[in-house]
Length: 388
Ligand SMILES: *Cc1c(COP(=O)(O)O)cnc(C)c1O
Image (cartoon, rainbow, N blue to C red; front, side, top):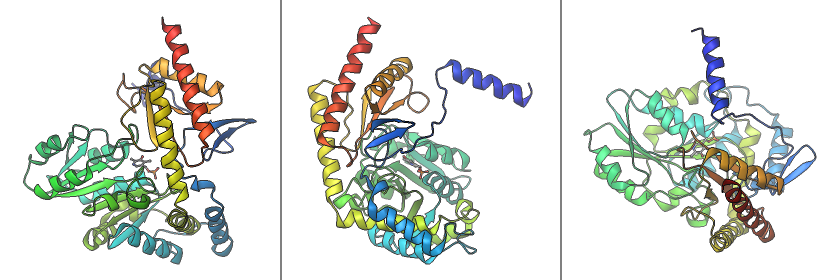
């Protein structure tokens, strides 16, 4: 079969299975409202958990830096693309994470790929939580190492996988799982890694800004993380990512990580934006306090309305709606009711585990949360009736 006919066939299968993906242009995708065309919806679909993507100080920092220094970095970090604004951000992140070194990456996806594919070699073992993000699972498969997965948040299962070989091991988990919103047992996994002579890596994409002391993320929950990855595109409201680690690992990545070496560095103005976002997070704890209050409010109202929640204490609040068609129909009804949230289907989650992915933000008001829960309860009732 020719390549083109195979592509056509795969597209037909995808469409037939109700898994078609496409993009929609929007005037605003973060903040309290999602805006597209001349319509707006309450936004329960974005990862801008602290509402920093629209914070005046963050916007100003990016605008000022772009005015002063221009936009693009002009090169890779190792050639000409490492700006004093990058260094200022790195210094800030070293302070925040308590790790000796920080490297900046264009995205969390590329940071995860870069670390796993460069650090691990043939004969090594990478042990991951079954529910780890695609960027980690795929990076494990692309690396020359053997990949093993353990049962979700099951420390004994992780230990069994770590026992498969004596050395050359890395254990990696998310701190807050992107589709379930639950937290990993970081302290126990760190201990298991030490006991089995493995490096411990944590992906804090959904943790930074939200969990830990003052929202400082996974490093404030568990200090002995060897490789810490966090993205700047979620609670920090900007974009880009970091790896925080010790001297040797940072030096190694600088020599051998192709995703660090062969790519244009983050625009310096964005680095200034991330620094401003971190300043806001530290100086204005009210954003996180409001987020935590809205999460609590959402959970209480949702429990009272008997919505099928998962055990998540974080900004990610999934509502289980089994069946690709049913979850799509519930999300469509919510959209009509002025609420935007994600309808998550296979292959992102297992078939049968379909869900609405509702994300709470500091930008929401108490009234917004009430509106959301009432609309979800109504949409679930309506589809149940239709199915009977
Ligand atoms: C979003 C996400 C990433 C990718 O980060 P980007 O900066 O968006 O590329 C990696 N890991 C997890 C768990 C994520 O949720």
